[in-house]
Structures are given as C-alpha cells and as structure tokens.
Image (cartoon, rainbow, N blue to C red; front, side, top):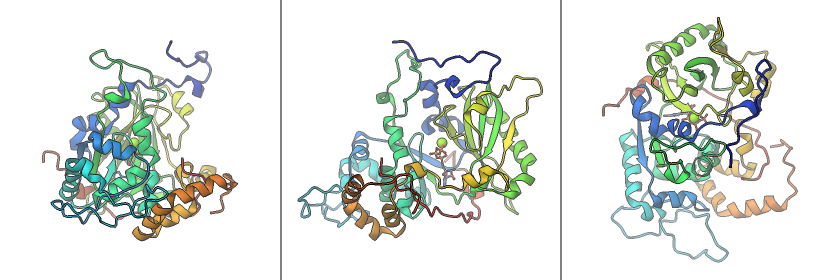
Length: 401
Ligand SMILES: Nc1ncnc2c1ncn2[C@@H]1O[C@H](COP(=O)(O)OP(=O)(O)OP(=O)(O)O)[C@@H](O)[C@H]1O
Ligand SMILES: [Mg+2]
C-alpha cells in the first residue's frame, strides 16, 4: 500500500490544506515531553517524568472512575475506603471497594512522593497532552495536590485518550533509528508531573518554526490583552534570542511548534521559559492563525519577516474567540455543575455517570443549542499573580465522546 501523499497544488498557486504534509512518527516522538526534556530540562520548569507501568496503563484504559483511597495507610490491608466508584454494575451496590492502586503500587507510591517533592501541587500530562478538557472536574483548574486528583483528570480527559490511542493517526510511517517501523506499542508512555506554577496566561506564546526559522508567533490565551501590543517588539526580541540560542539548531526536526512563557514582574527581569514542543501538524492548534496561512509562508523569501499576531479589541475574531475553549470536548451542564461544586458532587456525579450518559443518548439532544537536582530551576521566577479570567459560562450540550 502506498503512502498517502497530499495532492500538489501548482507551484505558483497558494497551497491549500490538502497540501499540508503529514508528520512522521519520529517527529511525533520528538515532540513528546519525555524526549525533548532530555535536551531542554534547564530551560523549562521543574518536572519529573515517571514511566507508566502496564498496571497503570490498564487502569487508565478501563471504563469508570475508581480512585485510590488517599487516606489509606500504605501498610494497611484495609481496602474499604468509601471512595466512590462509577464503575457500577446493576447490582453491585454492596460490592467491596477495591483500591485500584494495589495493581500499580510502586507507580502510585512514586506519584505520591513526587507530588510531595515538587512542593505539594503539580500540573499533570502524558507524553503530549495535558487534561485541559477535564479541568471542570476539579473546579476549572488542573492543579493537583494528590495522586487521586491526577488520576481523576487523566481518566476524564479525551485529550489524554488521544495520546494513548490516536497519537500516530494521520502520520507517515517511518522507520526508527534501527530501521523498524514505529508502532503505538513502541511508545514508552510516561506521566509528566510539573511543579505547579500560577501561570499568567496572557504572556504565553506559540511559535511556529519552518526550515529552522520562526515564521509566526501567536498569543496563546485567546483574549484581548492591550498591554501585549505595547510590548510586542520586546516579546519578539526575547523569543527570537531564546530560539536562536536554544532550539534553532538542536531540535531534531526543521519544522516544529513551541510554546513559551515570558513572565515579568516589577522586581524580576523578563525570562523566557519553554513550556512545550508540539508537532508541526494540523492537530496543533494554530490559535490566531490558520494552518493554510502558515503553509504559505516562505521563510526563504527575500525580506521575509515573521508575523507576530495578537488579538485586537476591535477584531471580529476577538468576539469569536470569546467562545468557550474546548467546547467540542465538553460535557453536559449537569456534569460541569457536578465538577465545579466540589468533591461531594463529583462523587455523586460519578455514581450517576451512566444514568446521565444513557439519559442523553435517549433524549433528543439539540447539539446546536447553546443554552447552558541539576534541573532544579528556580520556578518561583515563573510565579506571578494569576490572571482573573472569565470562566466558561456556556457549556454546549454535547454527549461525552
Ligand atoms: N507547571 C504548570 N503549572 C501550572 N500550569 C501549567 C504548568 N505547565 C503548563 N501549564 C498551563 O497549562 C497549559 C497547557 O500546558 P501544555 O502546553 O503542557 O499542555 P498541552 O496539552 O500540550 O497543550 P496544547 O494542546 O495547547 O499543546 C499551559 O499553557 C499553561 O497555561
Ligand atoms: Mg502541547
């Protein structure tokens, strides 16, 4: 079977989305946190990479949400904790609760110890994706203070499921260094725990690189921030210097997308931190750009300048951007309400999970209606006052995927 190559648009015509090259599997691997962290640990926030064991992988892949008992004495054999389970069967109200972490005890112990080591609060992700679409489960935050917090987010997130099941979708089969074709089963999955930082999201940027040159930069938080316009030249300078010094010649691929965070306070100098490296692929959100725009940029053109795009107050886009993030991944309002109302409600919701899903499947849902060590970087430098952001108020009525 031949590789699916995109149709070629004639050279002088603008390229269309069909011309977008599929990424290689090796490129996807290179953009995974465990891979790039080996090279760039000194320019990113403090993090730990914990290899995922088969026991934990099975737990992630299981239906239902059963969480470990955080208060259990690790030495004790007592397992009845009262922690909720949504993996109910029709007649299992009296079933004995089995702590799932018994199947991945060493991994669980490492997660607990790592959270403590990182100061008691972490941001979790797998190799590529954080569970941003599951933040509603924790009251609209990804800040995890316990292993159960981490597992709840990972098990709820569709983005994490994508890492586990679909990360090689729409890629070109490529042999690895030993000539073997890369398969999902070759991926060493890892849980990445990053020390929690109160990120000021207005000063996060996404940078698009083609042919080892920056072609486009976008603000990452899709709201209007007037002060960014005044600081645009300085941010461009900082990002360019950071790229030239750290990434330009060292990243294995010549096309990629990276995210940076540039906090600056009255008392600290602006410093650029690497947040993530993303595939140069349609799956990466181009934010204020369209992928076709980036596709048609030619960094080798004479006088080429990268485009730094910010959202203006009067942009028609500014209005559109105000719509809810990840709305396509969101859950019904009942579920969101449960998530924002605290642990007791989450437990209640988990018990009723199946009823909700079945109810939705039966109901005539109008999906268009919108009615409701050496690497111990000084992370304190990244801290700052958290932006007060308008939280999502309108949740789409879409059934869980
Ligand atoms: N250590 C941290 N503490 C708190 N928040 C963080 C931390 N690291 C990242 N974040 C926040 O989470 C957001 C997403 O992080 P990250 O880029 O790692 O996730 P992702 O799933 O790869 O996102 P994307 O799909 O946009 O590429 C960041 O933009 C930042 O606002
Ligand atoms: Mg990313």
